[in-house]
Structure formats: C-alpha cells, structure tokens
Image (cartoon, rainbow over all chains, first blue to last red; front, side, top):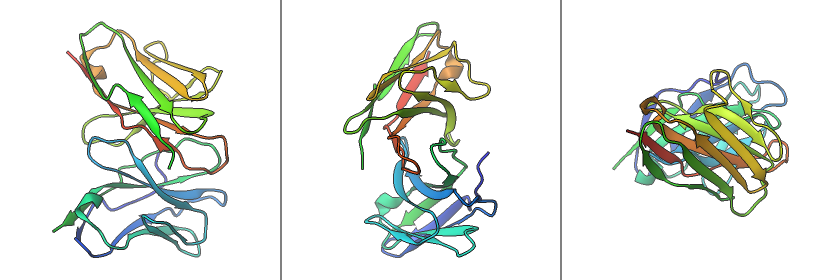
Length: 109
Length: 116
C-alpha cells in the first residue's frame, strides 16, 4: 500500500508556480521522498528525491518539512506540458517504488 | 537521466498466443529491473522484481507461470505474457536502476498490449 496521501487533482495557471503537497506522516528515518510524473500513455518520469534537506534541480524544487511528515513539490513556472499525474513515493534502500493514486495536475492556459 | 527503452511500444495479439516485451537500459547497467502494469484510469501496479542472473520475485496475485520474466544480462530484461487473454490487455511498464542505495529508478515508455 502507498504510504503517502495526495490530493486527487489540482489546477494551475500557465506561468504560475505549481505547488503539489504530499503527506507521509508514517515515514521512517531511512526513507527518502521521491517524485515522479506520468504524462498520458507514457512511462513515469523521475523528477526529484530527497531525505530531509530541500532539493532543487532543473525541473523542480522539493521542500520537506522539518518533521519529514509532509513535503511539497514546486514547479516554478508551470507550462501546458507539465500537465500530468504526479506521484509522491516514500522508499528506502533498494525497495521497489510503490505508486499511489497521485495528483492529476492540469495546467490551464 | 538514464534511458530505459521498451519494445514494442504497442502490440495486438490473438487470444491464446504469447507476447514478449523487451526492456533495455541503454546507458547504464541495471542490476535490478521491475515490471509494472497499469489498467485504464488506475495507478501502476508492481508485478515483479528481477535481479540479473536470478529468478524474479513476483507480487502476490501475479501468476509466475503466466508472466515469465528473464533478466539474463545487466542491460536486458524480458516479460513474456503466455497464453494471453483479453483480460491481460493493459499498459506494461518496466523500470531499471543501478545497484546504488537510494538511487532513482528510470522507466521505459511502456508497452500497450491489446489481446483480441
């Protein structure tokens, strides 16, 4: 079973920041937070992951709360191509990624 | 990021026949590969985990004799759907990662299987 809770859907205006929340209140000390997205009829795409520090790459930023019970994925300037289902997953070591239902983000022109 | 390639992208087969799907890691060696399937409007469901040179580990409810997985090299894993039936029609996706701890996994583009 997925160990995260995400809103089923969100809308975001094109050009604005998209902030996608994720709750993982039962996260263990050695579990990382991973974010993937799936554009329709494609395989999931890796976005970012982190343990406890905030992380940033060319795609997004990941903000993890100090107690690690929740996190937020930030797409700084959403475009229409960012419309996808976004999955927040907690995982440790070499265990497989277990997908929940994710958040369907719709970027609107 | 690393590239994982699946082939074919889509396939239509007759009921009762077998279909093989290939998953290749193109620019890295994948000690572990994972196979998922996804039904319409649902999330990805893990089917099995395969480690190079050893037998795959199947998730509960997945028939190992129906879904044959071979991971004969560090860059190739195959999934064969044997005696396919219409209920096996689905989107099959593979994933691969290196052996490092807490590293990201990369996904293929998926294979759409339709059994008629």
